[in-house]
Image (tube, rainbow, N blue to C red; front, side, top):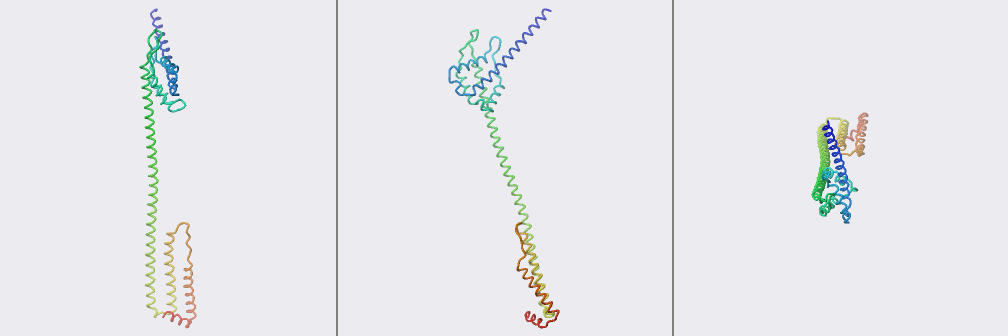
Length: 295
């Protein structure tokens, strides 16, 4: 029963020591981070011997353990967390200043103080490791920033190239559509001109046939047919050419019926009316005039 109580007391004592050790470690971690922030703020931190001495003493208090506690080992995660905060917020300091001050700490620190037992306090090894770890993380952060910047620049180049390709693709589509439209217009215009040639050729052939038989028909009939043929040919040719104008015109253009077509059609209609009147009333004198005009 006595042994059991003794064993239980030892366990409780070990737990108490562990709690004290954890509290001490947490306290040192907070002091360690605050010291890093302090070293990152000013380049003149080591301008006076008293400031240098205070920093060396604070580092010894953090790293050097007494009889009850082991020497403190800094956490890599704490270093990276502090450096990341400084890099994100310029009001907290500068990474280059921190690196310069740590180099001064590494070069300037000399073991001079003693602990309670008269043993020389020497934290040169932890200081060298701290200097190395800080510079390693600073180099890593700078490398990541450069890599990120290069990636961003490359992304911008790709985006610009993609935009240019899209614009050129749109231009090519517009050009292809214009070429297709022009091809259709050319085909239509060629077809219209072919129709004009055929209509004109047919009209000439019909006129030749009429003129060959002019002696076998009444003068009124010959003049009436010739006038009607001229009226039809003129309007067919005008309609076909009007199609060409409709194809070539712009949306804002307005095509008006020409005055000369009105005049020609009016003359043809007037001739037809005169011939019909003369023919109806059988005016022989008018027939003689037409015969003299034709022959």
